[in-house]
Length: 283
Image 1: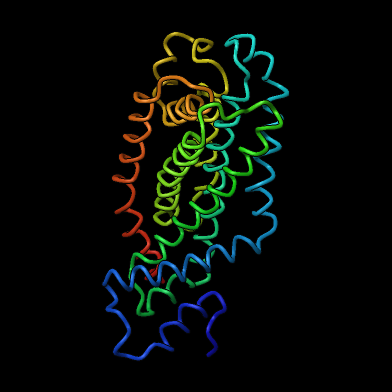
Image 2 (image 1 turned 135 degrees about the horizontal axis):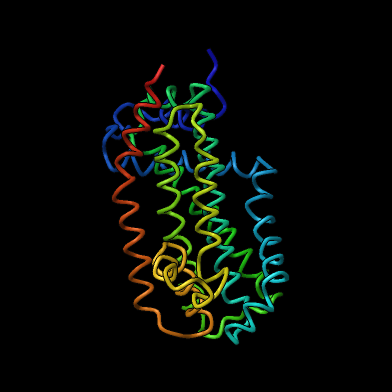
């Protein structure tokens, strides 16, 4: 039986190494090497899927322009600040969230075709494939963030706080995206194949997208809703990115971003690993 093309690089790497040089399956060396190889596989699949690639890079940029055209004057009049400083961070986070759903769909597809099971029976570290998917998501988020930051220059977004602030904006996007992607992958791998996981995550993401300080100034929301909007995951991330771009307080909102990210990772990493094992061995 021929080796499936999706597994060829991993299987070949294991097959061509002398027995004495193959690191133990549960070792850190095995995890590092195999994660790197499997990350390459994930990125290769992503780059070759032109519809997903376009949706990850072009659709968020078009959405950003749309938000600017539709909401730019209203937000600018309410805050006295160019709405691009809220729109660009908002769309960066939205792109990170909705892009992760493509990874969830791909995970369920590979589960249905039996690829997860085939990978599982190989002498591969049990965490390597899942960590490879998360790293591939970070690469996707990095690429889309850079594209959106460049596109933001055309609608008035500027970097007034120096190069370190630019790296900070990218870092916040990556931290938020890693936590959200881990949550999505955990939900996807633990859901039944027929479960409406994508519509449910889309609904959740849409609620976050329309109730944050990037979509509309916090003061524009009803008083009872303002504490919820101010403390939901997207708002502090948007405010940190806004402050890094144009100046302003950072510490409080950065702490909120870190707390949200740590909580999501703490809650969903183990279920993701356990769910992956069940999905790979489920017949």
